[in-house]
Amino acid sequence: MTPNGHPQGCRLRKGRCSIAGQAYLLTSTTCRRRPVFADQALGRVVMEAIDHHGARGQTMNFAYVVMPDHFHWLLALGEGVTLVKIMASVKGYSSRTIKKLAREYFAEGTL
View (cartoon, rainbow, N blue to C red):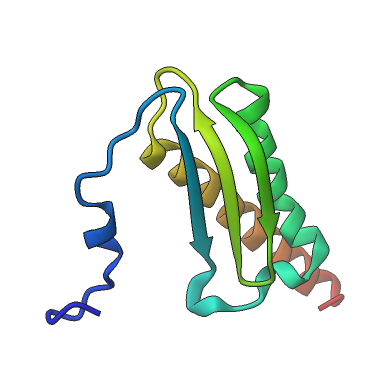
């Protein structure tokens, strides 16, 4: 944490630029590092989001791994996309889909 109580991630992003063809290693964690992706169906949601961007040519996916509370993704950016947009898309889609699945599980009484 920085002195004002904010996570240090903002300092890591300072000066970051998005360059087409450049390789990046991205990591993202779940909220409060909850092991959400320990459920294979929920981990697959992140994989589908990553694969979606590769199929559209927005990224060239070299490798990724989904762990119980985070994921790592090695990629190269395509033309016209930024790290911010790609990560916002993957995280937004994953979050919405996982929340929807969780509501369905609870409604069916399977969780």
